[in-house]
Image 1 (cartoon, helix red, strand yellow):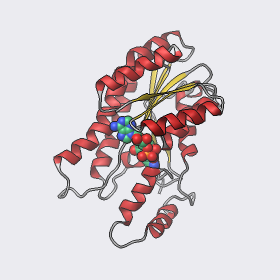
Image 2: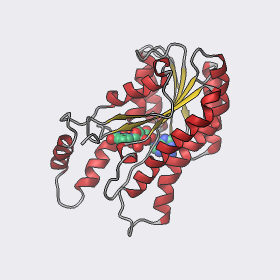
Image 3: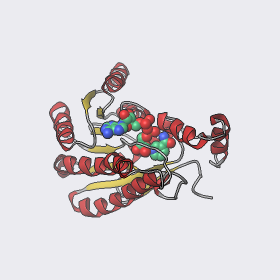
Amino acid sequence: MNRTDGKVALISGSARGLGAETARVFTQGGGKVLVADILDDVGKKTVEELKQAGADAAYVHLDVTSESDWENAVKTAVDTFGSLDVLVNNAGIFFTKRTEKMTLADWRLMTSVNLDGVFLGTKAALPALAESAAKAKVGSAIVNLSSVAGLTGARGASAYCMSKGGVRLYTKACALEFAQRRIRVNSVHPGLIDTDMGQLVIDSAARGNRSPDKVKQAMQSSHPIGRLGVPTDIANGVVYLASDDAAFMTGSELVIDGGSTAQ
Ligand SMILES: NC(=O)c1ccc[n+]([C@@H]2O[C@H](COP(=O)([O-])OP(=O)(O)OC[C@H]3O[C@@H](n4cnc5c(N)ncnc54)[C@H](O)[C@@H]3O)[C@@H](O)[C@H]2O)c1
């Protein structure tokens, strides 16, 4: 399972968190990875760690809101590794703000990273993904990071929910559009995962009068499995969807949330 031998992945927002762990699992399966982020020092350190573990990895600066950065990232993947087989649209931001306090600039910030970023990445990678799909046994793959907040509402997080709900249906529409070109497109919907963003979710919920520890405990018990997720829980699912094991999956949503949306 989860073999990625010979495949090349470009993962946005992979300097840290779920993206960095996905890079680690992808390369453990035999694939090569282009780590891409705005956090250049952190991203370069991640690549060094991957290389020390024997992986084939490189770093490129990528602001997902920039069309020219995306074009450069795709070109770097092809120039460095010879092809592009997998795109993981992982970069994302999170904040909570009640509607009456939210400015149009806040709304557009969320849209620009979490939605424009996914569209621009998909558009830029499409020619290279189609080219490698034509030569591959199964085809190419795009995996988009949505969220459980793309399935159900979350109080105070309307802009985030809007963006992740958008990613969910953009994924399905692209799956239909690209199926004939043998490019599969699926979304992943994590519950609360222990990363910098996961901590931000806890701190945002604690704002006011509750302690972050108490909020964390409450959130743990809202996941029937009884714990928060760890990055490997999500990376394993992303790499599965990127691998040929998921050959008959496209337009699907993989929920990895410890059962939180099953209740
Ligand atoms: N952690 C969770 O609980 C959780 C739950 C559901 C969904 N997700 C989603 O998973 C993805 C990864 O989340 P994470 O927990 O690793 O978050 P994180 O904040 O730990 O890491 C996100 C990464 O994205 C990068 N990034 C942000 N803006 C960028 C931009 N404009 N261009 C390029 N890179 C940018 C950051 O620098 C960072 O390296 C996000 O899309 C997030 O919405 C996370």
